[in-house]
Length: 216
Image (cartoon, rainbow, N blue to C red; front, side):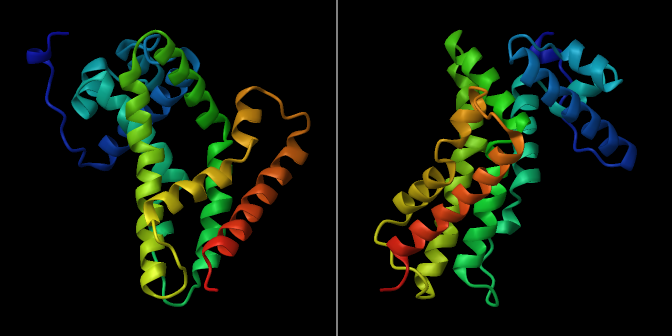
């Protein structure tokens, strides 16, 4: 479809519009995970969502923007921005514990791992811009939110950190451990034990981080 002929994205208003938007995002998420970006067409998304292709374009404009919104919605659902709010009645360790557990579950979630596989496939085919979209909406967004939270904790005297941005990256790296790669390569022998280990790895990451940056 010629770019000049594509309808401009419109902000959804009525509840029915929001329902259609949700259906489109859900269909697109499943198709991107199964068929990668290149293997997913707007026609296929429309068919899977039970809407017209014109409706898909009216909500999202083009496939690049649809992909970005799929990633953004997935991340916001699993790790909402409110989770990183510094609350006066909750200590930084408890906030980090909650983030750690939810982040670990999100990173090892089947949808997330499916997205990783799809992106790696697209990058291998010479389409790194899709990987950049995931980076911007996922890890980069997460590191920014964590850094802002850590800075507030430093200002409140709960943490002692010289380089907050680096510490945010360290925290997120600790949460992953080897669990994401094990799920990515299908190496979880027992799903129940794997889930327990995901949680234990997240808890241990917070312990290590607080030993490094907690008040001395």
